[in-house]
Amino acid sequence: MKTRDMNQDWIATARTLNQALPYLKRYEGATVVIKLGGHAMGSDEAMQSFARDVVLMSQVGVHPVIVHGGGPMINDLLARLDIKSDFVNGKRVTDEATVEIVEMVLSGRVNKRIVQAINAEGGRAVGLSGKDANLMICDQTDPALGFVGTPSDMNPRVLRQLAETGTIPVIAPIGAGRNGETFNVNGDTAAGAIAAALKADRLLLLTDVAGVKDSNGNVLTEMTADQVRQLTADGVIAGGMIPKTETALDAMAGGVRAVVILDGRVPNACLLELFTNHGAGSLIKG
Image (cartoon, rainbow, N blue to C red):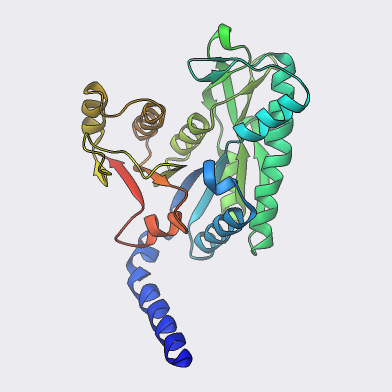
C-alpha cells in the first residue's frame, strides 16, 4: 500500500509538470517582479519555500526580481531603541533618526536574509537597494512625512545586466534623493516603479489576503483596470487594498503587462500563479 501511494504521488508530480509545460514556455525569458512581504517573510519555513520557488523560476528561464518590505522588523528595532515612530494616513513619519534605522534593517538584516535563503536553495542572488547604481531616484512625498520618497527617475540598467548573468536581484525599498538624501519608500510603490521601469511581464504583489473581493466577499480572479476603478468608486475596494490596486494601475500605465494581487500564505503561490491554469489571486490586466 505504501509503495502504491508513493507511485501515485510520483504520477501526480509528473502530470503536474506535463500540464505546466505551456506555461513554462509562455514565461521563458519574461521578467517577473515580486513584492515580498507579509506571511512569506514571517518564518524560516515560509522563506525557504519562497526561495525555492524563485530559484525554480530562474532555472526555467524566468527573470525574477524581488522587492521586499520589512515593517514589522523596523518596528521591532525602533521599539528596542526607544525611538518613537508616528504614522500619518498609514504612512510612517520618517525623521533623520528613523531613516537610519529603516535603511539599516531593510538593506541589512532583511535583505541579506532573503539573499541567503535564495542562495541556499541553489540560486545566485545579490542584495541591492534603490540607492545602488542610482536605481531609484526619489522626490520627497510630503514634508509632513519627512524622509519618505516617491520614485521619480528610474535607472534599471543594473537589473538588466544582472538578468543577463542569471543573477536574481533582491531590492530593499530605499531611494536616493537628488541632494544626497536617503528616502524610505513604500515597498509596493517601489515594486511598481521597478516593474514599470523594466516593462515587466508580471508584477506579483504578495499579501496576507486571498485577493481583491467583490461586494459579496468572493475573490475576483480577473479584472480590467476600468473594473478596478469602478469597484473603488463604489467602495467595494477599500482600506488597505486601495494602495495595492493603485500600485497595480500605475504599474500597468507604466508598461507592465499585468499585475496579480495574490495570497502569500498559500504554499507555492508564485508557481501556482505563473505555471497553472488555476492561479492564486486577482489578475488585473487591460
